Image (cartoon, rainbow over all chains, first blue to last red; front, side, top):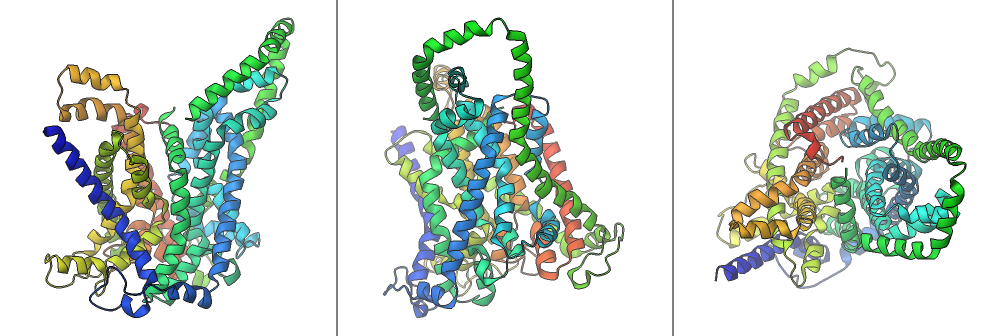
Length: 275
Length: 332
């Protein structure tokens, strides 16, 4: 009897939680599919009388929304790929060797999490403009890569630690150099962890607003968050177009996250628990 | 899963290379010392070569800008007059500490961090406990409710701005229909409600983080611990406080530490939801800084605020790790 009560309490709790979590997403999607008139009419329709893609059409007609999406994809993927290429080596070394300075480097990474990024914003802007990188997507690729290095290194280090070092020892005895052993033997085994780290970096890059707003203001180089930021000022009350833009910004991360969730969790908890 | 894969692959490898393994071992005997020494130095080379790009990049684009930013805080650096920038000592700090809006933002930051963290943690922990025992469809359920974590604070601010809209917002409509309120509430403009509204959006954002991390920690508790507690006849509450919480303490410490830092320094949710309004009542320190930099180009003042933030975070971290006895926390 008591057990039954507990189970039904759990079910009710899970159902309530699901409603609270899913309703905002539902609502922004529904709003984006409503005709302009229905959005502002009272009483509110919880299921629209007519569904339309007008808001999406408007988005692509009145702005370069396709360009923004492309830019966001390009920057997010490029920076995530760079960070993986760099962090594989550092993560590996920090997982496999104890050496002088090991602790300092880990501490240096930890400390970056505490520095408020906006504190560096102004100097970064000056650095970028002296390198003639403002309004160039390259500036974002560079900054996002550096920004995710500490986290990715620590995440990848956690994945490396799970793989027994006897694996590459065996390969090295077979005559492989350490680097070949790493790329031929270890990395194939670690692909899920690498994918998780990649996706984690991708999502962070995709979402980043402040650096992007600071460095980019030309139409051709805007990323999605920059574009959405200028929409807020431009069509503040056009909630149809705003929600269409929000939906398009949100969907890729939700899909990617749903796919990779399990690996990301493994990676994060590894980082948090292994000393 | 990864461990299993790694293990089986290693096994396979050893079987294949078994013979060679023994041969090399014999050969290595005679020149062992020399080889060891040269291997050691070549290993050091390898280590630092692998770390070089990371160190150079992080020093150049993370640490240098922060350190350089500190000097800006002592200059009257303003976009309006970049030509003759002077060092002005501690004037920027005096200015911000005499600014009522900044003091208000400091107080708001404490509220914002405290309530967001408590609510995120408790709700996330409950969810993790409920999800701990496997049931059919658990994976799908997690996929459905954890997604908020993958969104940006900026977009969540926009979504909740729309939900909380005072004229045609759906939350007002639901409350009216349920008969809970008689007239619409200006959730984002009413001084009594504004802070509650932004915090609630932030809680919605962060539950998933705690649920994910704490669930992973719960799953790692060995079953024997529960069996022992069962034999002792421990009730549910005692199991929670005597078995579960002590066991996952390292995760609790690390996650709350990181979460506080993130909640404190991310201005984007507030920026898009209220932009600090009404009258600065929802401004936190980081959004205050953002408005100084983005809005007015007051870089010197903004940097001074940045330094205050940094000092607060350092003090917090030191205090927190000291109070929770740092060795319990993971190294990240």
